[in-house]
Image (cartoon, rainbow, N blue to C red; front, side, top):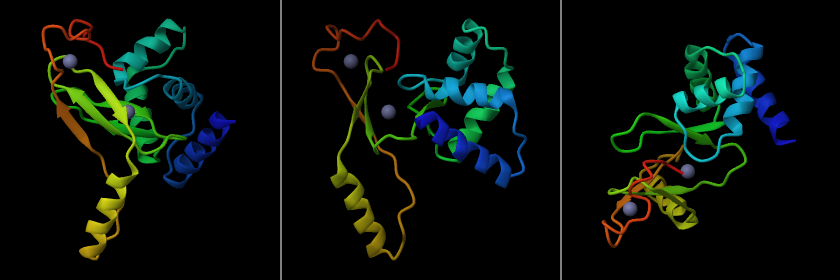
Length: 154
Ligand SMILES: [Zn+2]
Ligand SMILES: [Zn+2]
């Protein structure tokens, strides 16, 4: 099961780095991996509160950082936004297009982008470690943008 594999990665990481292994952290791990799309720490915290899961806000913040450090989550800083997270575990590398009017986030996969960067690194005698890409775009008709008033990310 996916969650079991993710738990194993997390436990190994916590052990190796002498972090405490607590039940609270596992509750947060499970809830975070079940969040759809791009969420911030407070959204996860509120979701857990709604689910009657008793965790502290500080622990949510800390655990999300730990999960990012061991590559279970990707940490995003979308333009002008608070940090958002999304599941990285079990997902293909993908990129984001952000509408500057409505903040809608579209995802796309394009292996050519990764290859190109590998080539550039190689040319400079470097080894690619990671990369991200955010593309900013406008919808065709700003006023008619159906997402404009949603004020939500996907
Ligand atoms: Zn738009
Ligand atoms: Zn994404």
